Length: 213
Ligand code: G6P
Ligand code: MG
Image (cartoon, rainbow, N blue to C red; front, side, top):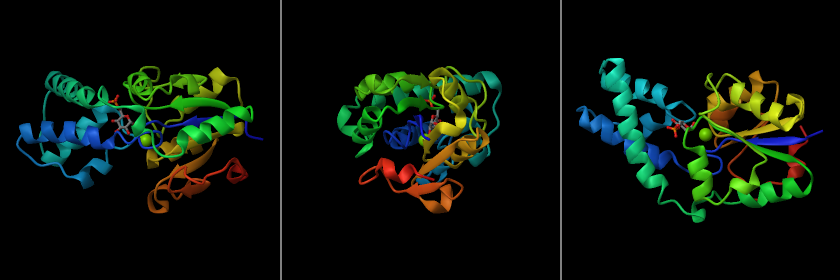
């Protein structure tokens, strides 16, 4: 029985990775090294401060905590400039329609994101009303692959983890779902998301009947 679906945000509902990339690249360039799109893959699903640590390790740069906090803040201000220009056109194809079908079938909907900007993004996309609960980076202390963000969602919805399906585009997110004893649909490539129950390229043509695993 499936009572709830929990959606990751970045990479599942909207492609924010391109904006994270621009903002992190500018920090890297400022520190004197390059940051490629391939490097950016490593930041998917990873918290802001961990993203910075990965970035700094790529550049071979070591900084004190105060400088790191200032850089993370600078990156976020730059990122927000892009986010605040987003419109509902940027919702990934099929996801809004799929959530509508789930809701009309009585399935509860949660957001489970590492992002501290999740509410801003949902507002920009005019999607806030599609979610019964939102759990984001401002509510959790343990990052994916820790299942905290998804377990909190299930708890708020009063649904058992075994009755939840998580939708994730990042390996750490798939692992978080498994660690929370939840089912998982990978959105992206089977090479990266192979541990999910099923992996699909996106929501176009995806139907509720495919959740029977
Ligand atoms: C998502 C993205 C990550 C990002 C993290 C924190 O998980 O996939 O790339 O680092 O959220 O986002 P924030 O908006 O709080 O910087
Ligand atoms: Mg993601």
